[in-house]
Amino acid sequence: MFRRHPILTVITFVYLGVVGWITLSPQTDTTGFNSLVFRFLAFFSRHEATDWLTYQRLEFLANVAMFIPIGVFFLLLFGRFWWFVSVIAGGLLTGAIEFAQRFIPGRVSDVSDLIANTGGAAIGVILALIITTPAAIRVGRERRAAERSRAAGSQSSRLSAEPPTEPLSIQRA
Image (cartoon, rainbow, N blue to C red; front, side, top):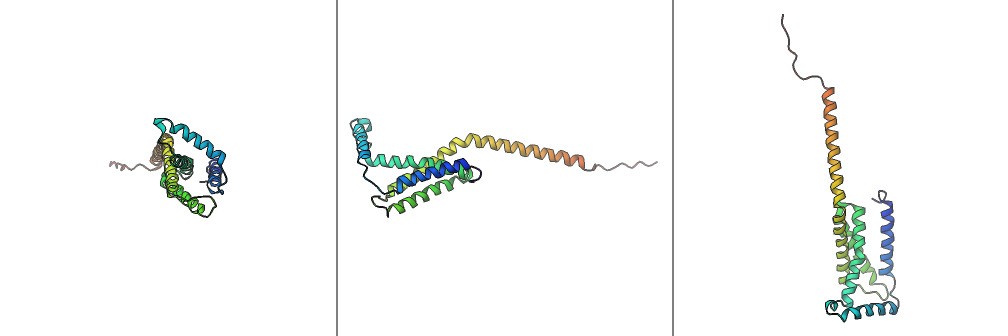
């Protein structure tokens, strides 16, 4: 898997490192970032169509969005046949992160994060399945055509190598 896709493997590990840094580094004072987030939320709360967007919902959506690429990368690495392994791996990764956050100062382990991250990985797997479907269909057609031509080639070579099976007629004089 890793040898067949070395560039994808490197990209996946880099992204996992970024996710690890974001989720496992001790929470520091982020007043500048939080003020930007709160100004963003205040802007949307003034409009009736977007007043549903609260801090908790934004955080949930951000957790979903962060794990969508992980689902895509895992599916591309494991393959379409093993799509369920990609979803399970996303869930296990999330569980490990949430467990580790219990021991990191300033971090909070939450079941909603587990749901959001696993859901994001599942969405990523579904998106990757949709995106790779045309290529999978094409590869399947090419594989079946190659198998048919190999089968036809082996039949013709077998026919030419076999002695005739018709009984010889014996003529009596």
